[in-house]
Length: 394
Ligand SMILES: Cc1cc2nc3c(=O)[nH]c(=O)nc-3n(C[C@H](O)[C@H](O)[C@H](O)COP(=O)(O)O)c2cc1C
Image (tube, rainbow, N blue to C red; front, top):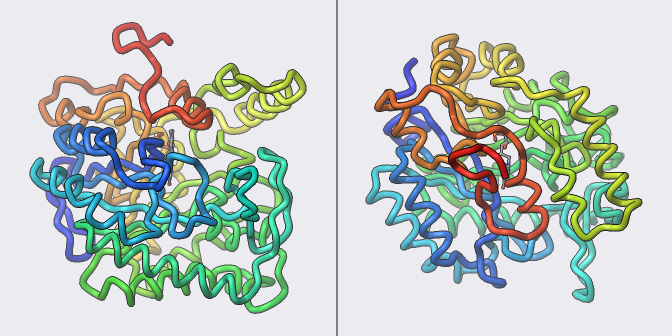
């Protein structure tokens, strides 16, 4: 397999095997609608030559919103507003998928709105210091329907596919994880029952968009925390998703409490601690540095997991995490451990990296994995690279 060759995800044909992995944009209106910034951001990416662009996570219901300027997929108003964006991406030869999410226990607490956080079980959130409520059966069913409605809107808005966000500790991921799902009813207690929520979300989405429309998912292969999801349960879950009719799976890892698993590299403690008390700054700083010791950056850091999963998986696999060079990306594809390579931070810095790679202008991406994009995003800033282009310093 080569990076520059055409490839398919279900009925969708892509110009190449390079995917822009989802990154929250912080560019929406307070109502969650796309803005001129959103349009410009995706136009630049499409011009840059990625075969498929996956948007940042859009919430399927206001109760699942994590950030004030996050995009929404929860109301019909999004359909007409995303049209110019999806059209622009298509004009520039790329394809675009909407990532849909419910934030669950990882939503930021919104003061004075009276909305409460909910999750499979009452497990405290150690970053925002919140305690979610345990979801009732009725809330579970309503949320599954919200995913279906959001996917239908995506199709109507001109998106070429949807990606169900089942990774990184958000609601679906928290159902999959034995750490955060302690239920003993029909939604927890065994790996099969913890998987049930994702299975039902997938079925609902599939029936909302039809058999011919590509539905993908992003899922943790491991939470990288004690008692969390591990390959013992995530690999069978991946195979079950494939047998249900998923079109492609992207694998990742980590939770809000352990972000260095997902985004390995430096810990931007000065950014994350900005405006916080000394005690909170110390708490974040020490915990992030501690995680870095166990989860250091190395290129293609989830590749070993992909190599183990891929031979047993019947659908295309996307590998994300630390892909920083053309040679490294080609090596992933040639070794056959993934069908697509997926990049996030490098394409925030250089949206035209795919073009540069195609023309042979560069091998290495300019991204230094400093994680300032992530830190600034946490502070509410717009998604951007906060390193100076020429020097690689802030
Ligand atoms: C600023 C930022 C925002 C992100 N937002 C999302 C998101 O909305 N959905 C998601 O699945 N992953 C999100 N991620 C994780 C990336 O998609 C990706 O899994 C991770 O950055 C590792 O890939 P990389 O080494 O190519 O950056 C985000 C990462 C960053 C740095």
